[in-house]
Image (cartoon, rainbow, N blue to C red; front, top):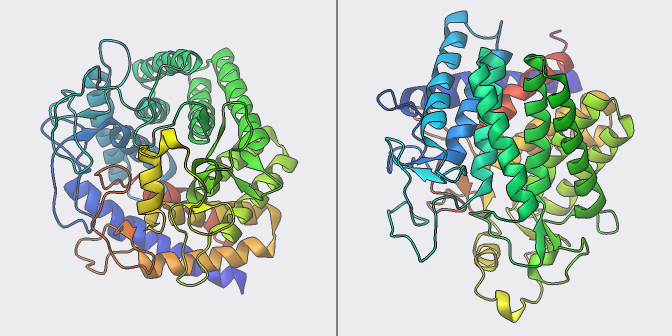
Length: 439
């Protein structure tokens, strides 16, 4: 019975990836004049709202195309696979030419030609505030590294690898000195955020694989040490067994804060990060860590699943309710407080995408029926909710309200980004092929 369901899921994901999502982006998302990619589409995908380029999304797009080249041999025509690499190269060159500012940091947003700009949350150009720079999110730097490292591995382009590694070391220096911002999710003084060790883990272990492909064993070992340290921080500080959650923010002293910011969880981040940890465990042949990560992912689903309408809300209190708790006086106007209160119930495409890869990944190794049951539930909800009913458009509608109705709003960046869906579907295919008995 399970095998038949895995076969059904496999066929659905092939159709969504190759018949819906990728055709949209290959047709509409490629800037063939200036390089890079368009990602600022309306929620339903019917119109391009503007041509600005968030480096966050540009790096992800490069990663996506380069990974498709590496992973789709035998699954697509060879000419199509080579086209993925060529298009990845266009974005890689755009980033290497334009992403970094004079201070070495990456600009958060570029215009179509690659010049840094500032935008408001709705994607409109705005003037700079006093003392404000263009480098408003270190996450943008991480995704540039992520994309260029994967492109270097796929293409053998040593210049792309060297660029990624030099930027990575620059980022580590900024992290050590505390001189960075984290838009669109700013972190108040006295707190630390789960997103930092999470992205450091994934970027480090993927860049280590790229380093090894160039014979850089010492560099790979250094990168893997940083990945291992990130796992220790995630599982030792942000993961709270007494609450059965991963907290998104804790105090700088690694202790929980019993207020609105200290109590909230992000179920999608929990699920995504736990497959990062599972990948780390597989690289290290650490069965205990793998099982611990899978169990933590189940915590996310148990705490986060909407028992009334289905699906995973964007933010919750660690008890599973709407975000709650006192707000310190100095944080009453903080951006994260506003986002927790206004966006918590959104159902977004990306947490569900992460789960449809992470659950079969864990099930294949552990054969825990709870994982199979949750996979069936998340799969059914995801395909009933997010694919665009206008199949002529194809790309998923990424923002839904609590009841699953489309919403035209901005919840993080004013972009429509293919990364989470394509990465999850592409990574899920070989796992499901094995579970369905195709290998």
